[in-house]
Length: 230
Ligand code: XBP
Ligand code: MG
Image 1 (cartoon, rainbow, N blue to C red):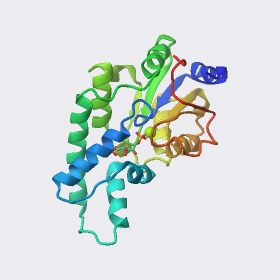
Image 2 (image 1 turned 90 degrees about the horizontal axis):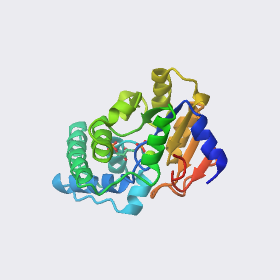
Image 3 (image 1 turned 90 degrees about the vertical axis):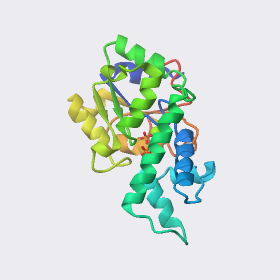
């Protein structure tokens, strides 16, 4: 464990967490939920891990479906209503998968959240996914009243532009009334790193399953997980 990473975390007035890949390895469940929705919708699409890894460059589930559709040479027409319905099926199935308890918080996350609260630090969430998905994950992992510990929660649909745009992070800073350098962002992907860096917030990367080969040159620290930081 780099002592400087501990210092970055402990000196921050607020810790701003990404969700997917950072708090838990959720992307594999998102992938399974997309495939469930494609089957239910009779599309005959299947995203294997390699395809999904590539598609994860597109942030946002609806945007990811649209991007894949545009890449197909022969494709059924797909209206915005179709995409919305597919995404609704996907989201419902994702919540069912989360509810089975198969997706615990990643190593070190619970200790870091508890340690930060005990030190009087503030907690926030800046994510591309939806409030419903955040609630499904964190209710299961931290209990129904989890949100009381977070001073600001900004999701993809709350802002105009999803990551790698800085919108979610700028909105968090406004809500917390803090300067960027008073915070630390904890992310797992290059898109998340770019988003936080564009808002001038120092970033600590926790390497995750799908993004471990991303370019993290701009990050202040790159760790395998968050254990030892609490
Ligand atoms: C992850 C994402 C999300 C999820 C799917 O962002 O890009 O789109 O893959 O969630 P982050 P939705 O790591 O910033 O949370 O289908 O709800 O978009
Ligand atoms: Mg992420």
